[in-house]
Structure formats: C-alpha cells, structure tokens
Image (cartoon, rainbow, N blue to C red; front, side):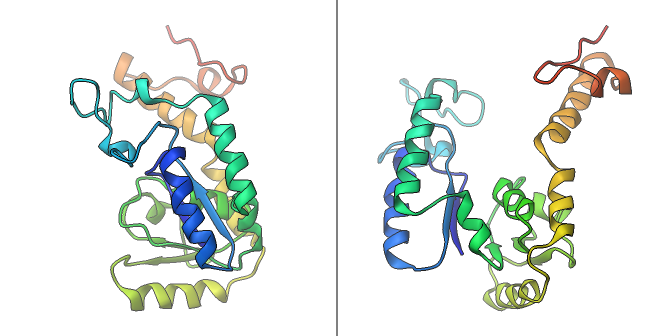
Length: 207
C-alpha cells in the first residue's frame, strides 16, 4: 500500500495522487492538511502571510479550508480510487515517515485491523508493539524490509490493532489535552466527573 500524509493541502496533494495512482496498482490512501496550499507554497509549513511572514505553526487560520473544499478533495480522491477504504484492502500498511508527531494514518490503519510498519521517530513509538506491527528506521531500507516481513506475519484483521487504535481515539486525545490545559490554567487537573462526564462536543467548565 502507498500513501501520502499530513503535509500538503488538497490543492497540492491531488496532483501527486494522480501521479502515484497512475504508477502503482496497489491500494493508495492519502490525508491532506486542511489548509490552502499552492504551487508556490506546496506544504502548510511553507505558507506565508501577506507580509511574507511564516504562518506555521500559529498563524494558519487565514489559510484554513472550508468543509466544502475538504469535501471536494474527498470526491476527487475517491474518483481517483484513493481513500481510507483502500486501507481495508491492504495486508500491511507501511508508514516510514521521516518525522511523525502522532500518526493519524497509522491509527486509521490500526482501526481497520491492519498491522502497521511505522517510523521510530515521534508518536508511533508510543503505539506500535511487535503484536500489531513493527518500528523501523526510516532511513534504513533493510530495516523497513525487515519490518514489513515481520508485520506480514501478523494476523489480518487484527483485533489487537483495533484495540490499540481505540485507546488513542479522538475523544481520549481531547480529554488528555484538556487535562494538560487545565493544569496549565489552574495548577491542577480536572476531576474525573468534570473531564469525562460532559455532553459530547462541550468542554468541561472548571471553577
């Protein structure tokens, strides 16, 4: 399986996907960042404001895509034969990123019960175990090859991979971030009743 993840916005990711789709017969998946990138500024890290200042990481709001722009990307990707559903066709998902702070594509693959070969750099090292995939050196071809062989020997679908993904689901991540922000704001974590017993979509109100 081939994939592209988390650097380019819809406008600059689709042309790459067209080239990838034409070059390979295996499943292809992709995840853009929700920012209006361009040929001159192809990644969200390269975006500049009207004064030439760097927008990344805290001034990206003016570049945010609308939900309609993201829907247009999803339609275009689907028409190319690219999408998250393609992950279910894979026996192993290989994501040897050079840098990966968290790994949403990794979690999506695990949620579909697919073993994952992931980079040792950043977030994947906190999730991937030998029972659900392999961690590799993204600059070492032999390491990647060995990881793919190890992952290919694991069961598919993998209930253990699904459980691992569930532990890192968005509501759990949001609760952890809320707890960190609470400690920073008031010097103590929110109580269990405040942090977990709230209406969906609403933040806890702390005294």
